[in-house]
Amino acid sequence: MTQAALAAETAPATTQPASGHDQAFPATVPAGTDLVEWYFEHGCSDGLPVVPPTADKVAQCVAALGGEPEFVEARVPPRWGDLTREVLAINMVMAGCRPDYAPVVRAAMLALTDAAFNLNGVQATTHMASPLLVVNGPIAARIGMNAGCNVFGSGNRANATIGRALRLIMLNVGGGWPGELDKSTLGHPGKYTYCIAENEAASPFAPYHVEHGYRGEDSTVFVFAAEAPHSVVNHVANDAQGVLDSICSAMSTFAHNTAVSSGHCAVVLGPEHAATIAAQGWKRIDVRSYLWMYSGNKFRELAFDHRYGKVYNRNLPKWYRRADEERVPIVPGPEYIHLFVAGGEAGRFSAFIPGWGHMSSPVLRAIDEASPAAGPVCIDGTCML
Image 1: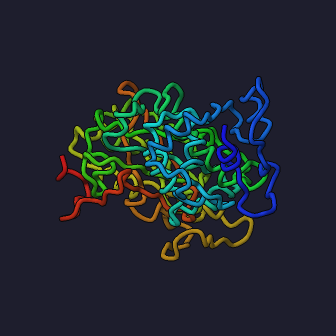
Image 2: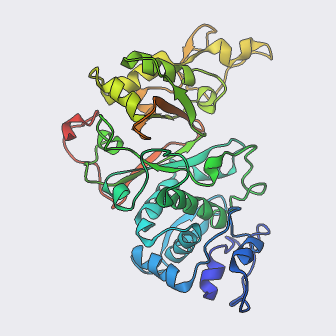
């Protein structure tokens, strides 16, 4: 292990250590050292054992990133550490990534450090939000990502380790350690890894990235500050409205952050639900519009009937009416609902995923820096099919 590889991954942003995790690393460790335990002791782990980042493994990942190990890809808040390619590679190796995952991990970190995402706030909030990564395009299949059965669960190396690499970077480079700069009251399991691919093969709709102007052959990453998935079950409905009414029911509560802080949300349709909806000729825009129109709460419900004092709620858009019987939509418009199809082809289940609120905006970017296709706006993606 080189001195640079050991020291760079937790180098403090200032000359003074910011926490117990900011410490100098020795150039070498004694022969026979249990490296897994060594990394635990030196505060480089997410709580699970890490893969020791040997020089050879790190070099392979650096090469996959284009070489130039000292090149700074981004700065990661809240500590604003420099994410060099070498540091990115070290954290990839520790997470268990293969070198061919490198383009996805890099693109995801560039999306997370986009100012619109507000990673500084996401890292430090008392809310439970964690970045959700959704991958679209050919690269997902090429690196073996899971978009099907148990998509949010265990069992797939790419999903698990790509998401874990992001978290290790947010810890080791961004300094988002629980109880220090990460002040989340509860957190959620997605703070270990929260990474899926859209099931484009089983979807009756155009893929998410195509809906947003990219070509089908482009590969993209989408990042979103999200709560854990909220299960939606409907084994009865054989029409679009019945399925979507169940999702509206899951959305229409004032217990999640999107309801009280607006912003964005995501809906993941299981393939069976998606097929039921598409069989009636519904498109993505129809689904998002229906969910927006028929979900929501009355303002008095959000205000707890004012029994604790008169409530205005400045987190909601100014143009919302604050009259007690007025409907307050979950998000400001259909375009704030991000729709995906994922999961196994058996089972009539979907998921609603609330966001952190208006404080963060999702970011979609191409892995190879491609821009959305020029020409007429293809809002539903159907012109690309």
